[in-house]
Amino acid sequence: MSVRFLEGLRCLFCILQVYLVWEVRSSPLPGSSVSIPISGFSLGSAQEDVHAAVLHQQHMNRGTRRLATMTGQRQPEDHELFSRLFDRIHSYKHAAPLSLISGAEVDVNGTSGVLEERPPNLTPADAVDYAHTIGLNIEANDVGYIGVVKIGTPPRSFNLLMDSGSADMWVGSESCRGDDGGDCGKHNFLGPSASSTFKSLKDDDGWSIVYGSGAVSGHLVTDIVSIGDLTLKNFKFGVASNESADFIPNDIPFDGLLGLAKSKISRQHCQTLVEALHQKKLIPEAIVSYKIPRLLDGHNDGEMMLGAMNPVKYQVETVVTLKNTNTFGFWEIPLDDIRVGNHSMNWSGRTAVLDTGTTLLLAPEEDVIALHKLIPGAKQDSSGSWTLPCTFNTSLAFQIGGKLFTIDSRDITFLPADPANPEGDCISGIGIGYVGPFNSATQWLVGDVFLKNVYFSTNEGRDEISIAKLRS
Image (cartoon, rainbow, N blue to C red; front, side, top):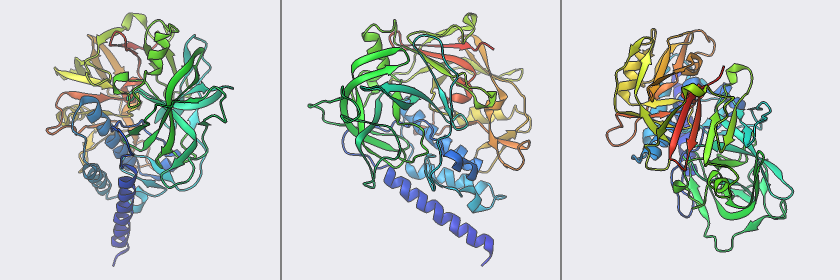
C-alpha cells in the first residue's frame, strides 16, 4: 500500500473518532434544553496546527446552527455538518490529510480538547473611562470577546464571554464536575465558600442549556454582581454544576457566559442582567452598545456600554435606528442592498441577523455566488467554499437604513489557504448558510466580519437596533 493511501485511512479514522466524541458531547443534559449555539471558542495555540479550511468550516457549522436557532428554522443534522467538514478536508487534495487535523481533537463545531495545557490567548482591552462601560478582551484572532464581571463578597473577577445570541448568565459552581466525573479545569468558581452573600434558591428545579458546542446544567442562585461601575444586589443567575468537555480545558479563557439577547429565550427563565439594571433604575434604558475590536489594528479599543451609546466611539450623523424584525428574541434588521466595488446588487427583501458571537458572514447560496463573481480572483472549491486573493482590496458595503457601511477587506480574508503563502489565496469570510428545509433565500447571519466595522447597539425596551460608522 502507498504511504498516501495509509495516510488517508488514518485521516478517516481520526475524523470518525472526532465525530463520535462530538456525538457524545452534544447529547442533551437532563431537563429543559435548547440548542443555542455558543460563541466561537479559541483552539488556543492549537489553531496553528489545524488547517485554515478546517477552522473555517467549524465556524461555518457553528454559524449555521446559530442562524437556524435565531430564525426558527430546522437545525442541521449532525451528519450534515460532519459531511461538510469531510468534504472540506477532501477538497484540499494538495495538503497531506493528517496535516489538516493535527494538533487538536477537532470537532465539527470547532471546540477542541487541546492535547496539552496551554495559556489563555487573550489581548487585554485598553482602559475605559466612560460610565457604565467595560473593556472587551479579544480571544485569539477575533474569535470571541470577553468582559470582566465581579461577583460575590468579597468581589471576585470572572471572565465572561459576551454573547448577543443567548440570554442567560452563568459561571461554574464550586462543586462543578465534568462529564467524565473530573473537575471543571483551572477557572474561577462561585459558591458559599467563595462568597458570603451567595444564596441558592430552594424552589429551583434546575436549568440546562445545550449549545451548538457543548452543554451546561446547574441551579439558580442570587449574589451581588458588578459590571463596570454598576452593582446589582441579589441578582438571580445560574451556577453550573455540570459542564461538558468543551468548557473545561485550561486554555478556554473564560469562566462563564453573559447572554445579551432578549429574556424571552432565557433557559433559566430569568431577567437578563441588562433588564435587571434598567428595572432598578441603574441605567436609563435597557441598551447594550458594542465597539467590537480587531486584533490586526495593533491595539484593543473594544468596549461594551450599558444604558446608552458612547458618542466618543461613533459618528453621530451616521446613526441609523431600525425596528427589530426578529420574533424569536434575537436581533435582526432589514438589509437594503449590498455593493461590491461600484456595482450595486439591487437586492430586496434581505434581512441581517446581527450576532457578536458569529465570526463570519453566512448568506443564501445564490447571494454568496453572485458576490464572489464580482471579486477579481475569487474561486470556488469542490466543497462549495470560496477563496479570494489575500491582497484583494475590492470594497464591500452594506446599505442599511439608506446609508452605506463599508467592510474592511482585512475582515473578509479569513486565513491564508496555504499558511506558507500569506500573499496567495485566502479563505473568504463570506460563506453559504444552509438553513431550513429549503434553505433561507433572504436571511443573512451577520457576524464580526461586519460588526468590527460599525458601532452596534441594541435597545430591548424599544425593540430597536442602531448602527453607526466608527470614529477614526
